[in-house]
Image (cartoon, rainbow, N blue to C red; front, side, top):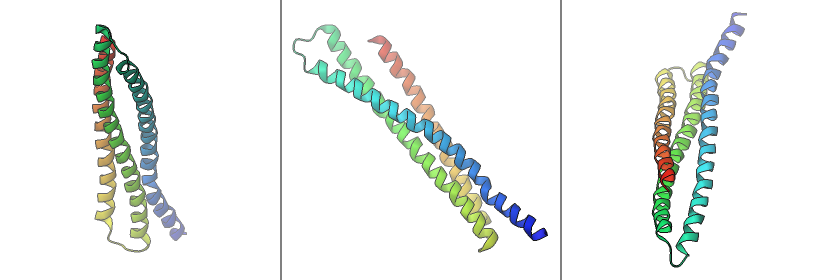
Length: 153
C-alpha cells in the first residue's frame, strides 16, 4: 500500500506545475484579447488617417488631427510590440511549466538527479511571466499616454 501512496504523491508532484500552466493560460487569454483590440484600433485609426490624407485643401484642425493620428498610430505600434512580447513570454512560460512536469516525472521514474534542472526550468517559467508582466505594465503606461493624445484632438 505504501507504493500506491508514493505513486499518488509522485503524480501530485508532476501535476503541481499544471497550476502555473493554468495561470499562464489565463494571462495569455487577456494578452491576446488586448492584442486583438489593439489591431482593431490600429485599423480604425489608419483608415481615418488614409481618409484625411486623401483630402485636398485640409483645414488647420484636420492637419492637427493628422499629426495626432501619427502619434497615436506610433503609440499603438509600440503597445503592440509590448503585448506581442508578453504573449511570447507567456507561451514560453507554459512550455517551461509543462517541461517541469515532464522533468519531475523523468526524475522520479527514469533519470534521478535532475533536481537542479527541474528547479531551473520552473524558475525560467516564472521569470518569463515576470518579464511579460513588466511588458504589460509598460503597455498600460503607453495606453494612458495615448488616451491623453486622443483627448487633445
